Amino acid sequence: MTLKTEKSYRFLLIADVHIDLENGGKNIYFIHAEKNLARALEIAKQRGCSFIVNAGDTVTNASGAKEEWECYRQIIEESGYTGQIFEAMGNHETRWAKYGGCSIEDCQREFIKYTRLQDKPIVRTEGKTYYSYVDRNFGDAFVFLALENGVSTNEIDNFSDEQMDWAKEQIERYTREGRRVFLIQHAPIIGFGVGDDVNHPAYQGSIRLTDQNGKAFCNNQRFYKLVRRYKNMIWLSGHTHVDLRDEVNYSNDGGRACHMIHIPSTAGTTRLAYDEKGERVLDRTFFEDASQGYLVDVFEDRAVFKGISFYDGQTYPQYTYAIYR
Ligand SMILES: [Fe+2]
Ligand SMILES: [Fe+2]
Image (cartoon, rainbow, N blue to C red):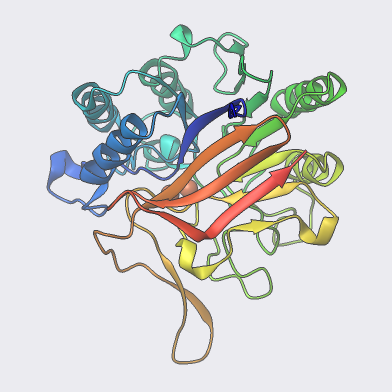
């Protein structure tokens, strides 16, 4: 009897790497970030991943990101992992601009430079931080959006008109062509989807659809419309850092939206907890062994997301999600 191997490809899914060298390393918050990135890269090598998808907040950028970006590149270089890494731009990539250390455009240029966008096999408009990639195995499309308007994710309209026009056109076209679409956009929407308790959000820093006076954030709403309209799409987000064990990993909003997967932080996960008044809060205590993401096996008819610990390389059968086309 000959066993036929089912055709597939594999990638590693990481988020919130948070390389942190605040004040030249004197003030580090994400203390396990560098080691954990190295561990994730080692796993990508051992497990034969074709590429890595990094959903953003690669740097922490409390006092400039240049050294952090250089550290990121150095860890990759030293790991011996030679596959592609595709990064989405998170909110921390522009954080230093909030404190007046540089402009948002400077941060965007740094992102483009250090993620080497010009060398990647992607579709992109010159100067922009969002782009798409089509994988050769099944022709799957990966659309990477960027939080291009700054770090205050919960206070602003996070996307330009131009980015949303582009995103809509890309998703529409790839869907029409019968492709599987992975959408990578760093920050979830508060009270919706994954990464937090939707009824009692613990994290207040997610995207909002209106400002505090109820005025619409038009492009956030356009984004929300896209994830509700294209129900076969798979949206991958990070941002809240919440651990797989809190089980806010997958949702499709009861069939009213696309498939949504939340990726915990590579640097160190947070936990959903309650304070003494019974309010939902995030417990930000870091444990070195709490560094997680997904190993993703993609077949013709399904994508299988296997939760994985970057600390010991073990996958979690209980946090495994199969998404059929
Ligand atoms: Fe983050
Ligand atoms: Fe974030």
